[in-house]
Figure (cartoon, rainbow, N blue to C red):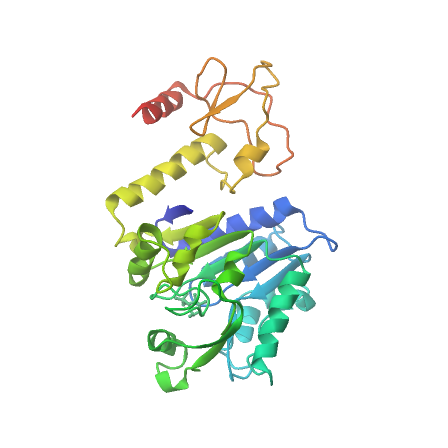
Length: 341
Ligand SMILES: N[C@@H]1[C@@H](O)[C@H](O)[C@@H](COP(=O)(O)O)O[C@@H]1O
């Protein structure tokens, strides 16, 4: 699992929006091969959606060939209620972008047969070949979607009773009145999320710092369902500084150093989409004809001089630039020092 730490909510939102943009653009979706995106609601993704809308307005991202599946929906709340997740998604994202609304899937919390609705949702996900990237948020008790503490980590889409803590947390959307918060929801299961080829969870705020610590520093545990991320081959958490309050200083430094090394390899403006580094690298340096070797994740020439990899995330098929100019002395020295220390 990777952990990316940014200063605040705004920086987290910006990072995630650009990440999503890069993933969709690199995928080059077509009507025959659409990009399947899982989406959350709540206050965590609002900034991400706002930035995606901005990116769409300046022509950097299109949702034309994107299919979406939302994580959850309240039971019994009219679809046009301002706090339904249907309304939320329409207001924050869908009405501002070029998505085909036939490609949007949100659980129907008013279906006459709720179990059948959940089965239908799982079948639809399977029919489109699974979810490529699932974005998520968590509650302060570490729940992902509405998979409350104690949910099976192998759970699928189903009806869930909301935990009292979640009802209290969500009362802020219902005039602070807990009696107005629906007590049941339909939600994808933990396994539904973990089946996605990549999972990205946004965690911001000091009130979620215990959940983040449980997820990162302790074991996989059904009482903190987001901890299932530890079992995912391609899991990414993007958090702000406040959310790291309960982490060990050592843990924070560790993940920051990993990101630093990663960024040094792929360049400062590259988001380091997972897996792209190796996919983008060629075995042989075109200019010297020498074979490149990977040593502890660092690209080495034959003469063992560490240097930045000539890779770009803009396209995994793109040729590396021809220039073999070494990085500035200071940079290379920094590299060496870091690798040796
Ligand atoms: N079902 C949603 C979750 O999907 C969301 O992650 C959580 C956190 O919300 P917020 O981002 O507002 O803290 O709220 C609800 O419980």
